[in-house]
Picture 1 (tube, rainbow, N blue to C red):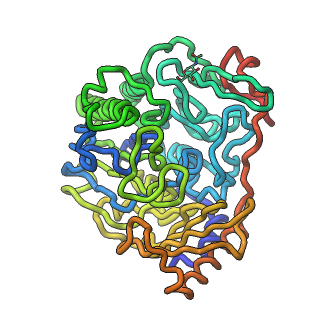
Picture 2: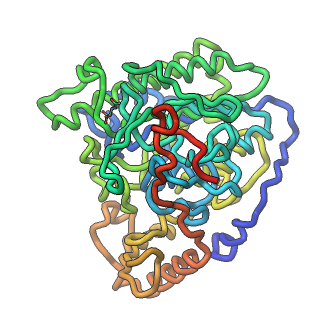
Picture 3: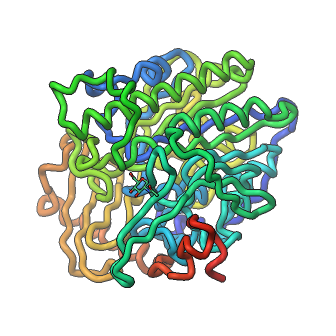
Length: 477
Ligand SMILES: *[C@@H]1O[C@H](CO)[C@@H](O)[C@H](O)[C@H]1NC(C)=O
């Protein structure tokens, strides 16, 4: 069913919200998102790690565990897909991540998920990482559907000082500043008071504080977008006591501690939901934004590749959905799921009658019942951006290598059969020339309708010196 023609028409598809017989209040939705979590990095995959809370809920009654859940290879593209419901090649976010002081953001013609959820009656909260642009106010979380934001705009920062510093070759100098804000009437207000408070604890406490103040007349969407376990490797000593330094590298030992603190956060949030009576009415989603970075202590083994690649280790992630009210018993779901599907899926969970939106499919029926009614995902785009682009067609994956800024004919095609070769070791392109030709043709068709990357060089106008020592907003039009 997903022929190219239909994919292209999706671009112009406009959402009209049809709320099917507003009887019951829609459920609360909590997305608990890890940052840069490796595919191997949970204690049911690597016993030397410590994630007892996540393990308990990953395999509990009321949980659907997705074994074929995919994201993009990097933060900005994944978060842009989650918010817009479109692949990054459609929104211009396919090429790398936004840097601090960059004059870029996700184009404003794409409504974000919380904008649609608010039409269905939701209050929307973002705690933690944004990374979707901040050079002007229109790009900020509270301009794009969130009623409340507390967190940071860029890729990473110190876990204790909430600042980042980097070397700028144009000015041959270090540029540093704070990146911790709340927004008041659309304006970022820097929070200079949290020096020394560990980011994982800070964001957990803030998420709990906001949910406890929430007016229960309305449903909420809480996006707890943690900094952990992204670099830099920093964690309070106490969390490292859960990890054995004799069986892991120094980097992985610290990483293991960071993960233990992330797991504690998950346990605290669920405990809060239970004690406050919100648990029964809340759908809890755990996932990560891309694969792990082995240099920063992560592991994606036995998958090939890592963060920032379209190999499985960069894009396949651990995802589960916990909601005893909607999911009977425990179930493994083997269907393909892609981060672009969350937009339609969560609108579906919110009671909106919707089969698909953007590039995504409403997979809420598949998640809750294990059966797809209506649309089923059998194809997906890993990413379209040289040097490596990749497409999925049922069991087959095309990895296409090309030069230049856009994908062109004449590149090198590799083909893998994932069920028999999940680690992408046997290129079978020569045995399947017809399929390869078909998939390369499709890739070139996608490229022909792709939106050029919106990335720009960094702009000195965004220098923290101009904003009281913080990476702020208001330096682009
Ligand atoms: C904050 O911490 C980061 C990461 O450790 C470091 O790179 C940066 O220089 C620190 N900034 C300040 C102002 O101390």
